[in-house]
Amino acid sequence: MDYNKIGPFLKDLRLSKNMSQYDLAEQMHVDHSKINRLENNKRRPTFDDLIYYSQIFDISLDELTACERKNKQNEKKLQNSLFKYLQNQNSKFKKARFIAILLAIFVVISFIGLIILYFFQNYDTMKIYTFSGSSPSYELTNGLLVLSKEKIYFQIGSIAPEVENIKIFIETNKERRLVYDGEYQVLIQDNYGYESFISYNDFISGNQKIFVRIGNEEITLNFIEEVSNNNFVYVEEKEIGKEQEMKKFETPIKIKETFQCDENDNCVLKTDDFLLTYNSGLFFVNNTEENYTYNLNLNVFSYFNLKTLTDFEVVDNQVNCIEGNCENAEKIYNELCRKIFKISIVPIWQYLEKTGGAKLALPFFLIL
Image 1 (cartoon, helix red, strand yellow):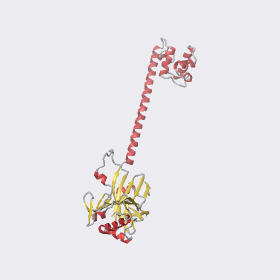
Image 2: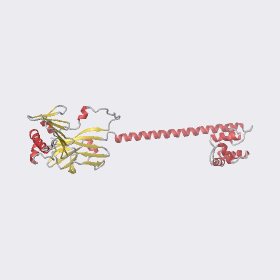
Image 3: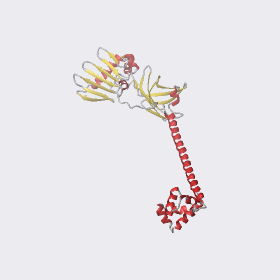
Image 4: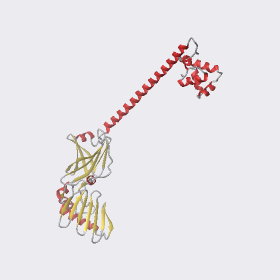
């Protein structure tokens, strides 16, 4: 098709029927501006446009593609013109399809590349640790470290006996630096980077150690990896197993040294006056008349007397009377602390003597 001739040829067809551009546009179901652009060679006719022209002006497609009427002299030429036009349209279609396929392949490869990049950047990079440690006078338990390549969270669970201030040191390749000096009950947050509180790569590779200093004593923190995003498929847990459910509290070392503990860390201490048991952060003292319970996790002391039906709790240094006469609650609490600590845990009892004995403000069992 000669695109320089097609416009004037289409115009001559319209004028031969004495039709305006608006009339023709109405029959072709298009806007009249399209007819104007076709006739001025500002737009090339599509195959559908040629079909409309063929039907409206009773002209064959080969005449339209050749831009001239058929006669005996040009009949073969017109046939070749239609063939070339169709061949050209097919070639354009193939080219467009090829470009579309290339674009689709590019999009798929780019998407797969992004997924692979995301995978290598994030796989096995989020880790959650629990940590603990001890020195001759102190026991540190239930610490939590959340380590990722975006944020770092570090928090000490509890220290017994209670302390006010601590210092935290980071040692990397035998070079030590002070990173924190203040109250121990604080959540330390930091961003991933060159001078971050904990170096992600050094910690993972084992080249970095963390120490807590209390006075002149130093505690080396021992970390246990609990969670890591290194699974390809995560299966929802429908039931929490007994072993998983009970693993809420580590048994302090001093309890293991003083109590008789089985393989499940069910610990027992027998005396002439009482039976003291420990399991998963809970202490129980039972005798013929009285039951005592201390929740190490919640720092809640509970007392119940079977004879007088006296029932109270000590929460956040406050006595909460549940039932019966609780006038002697503080006395009962302090006397029990003295008796239990004196008989069972010598280091803690020595600490209590130094601080003036057991007080209501002092937790019942200071992470023995």
